[in-house]
Image 1 (tube, rainbow, N blue to C red):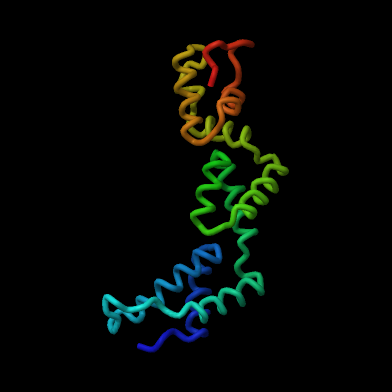
Image 2 (cartoon, rainbow, N blue to C red):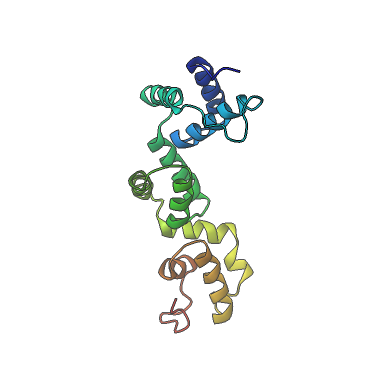
Length: 177
């Protein structure tokens, strides 16, 4: 089977984007995989990977037309993740795996934080979703520590966790972090 033509690649890319939004890097990896899979019958173990030039041309065209936009993807992802209670650290990790550069992640986090989607709001959302106040007696230091540990595992700082759970008294000695 001959290598995929740019038109075939474009149709494949648009079909994938119809299913769900993707980053440029995610789409690149998908097209590379599908291109090498199309050669599967004639490819042997020592076969080289497909030529990325036509794939890059298709991706550049999609990016120039605004069909794929990593910034828009990152902001949308951050907004949804923060609403579901994800910490900034977790969001950075997930976006990084999707091929978004560090600057793009930071810009998206700042843009969403300006809308009220900061770590405290996300921690409160997570605590509400997981019903931490109902599951744990927050006036008991041991139980409160378990609730804080739940937030810490999600990547929230001790200060943010304390604020999200609210203080039971002004100077909790057991809430060192």
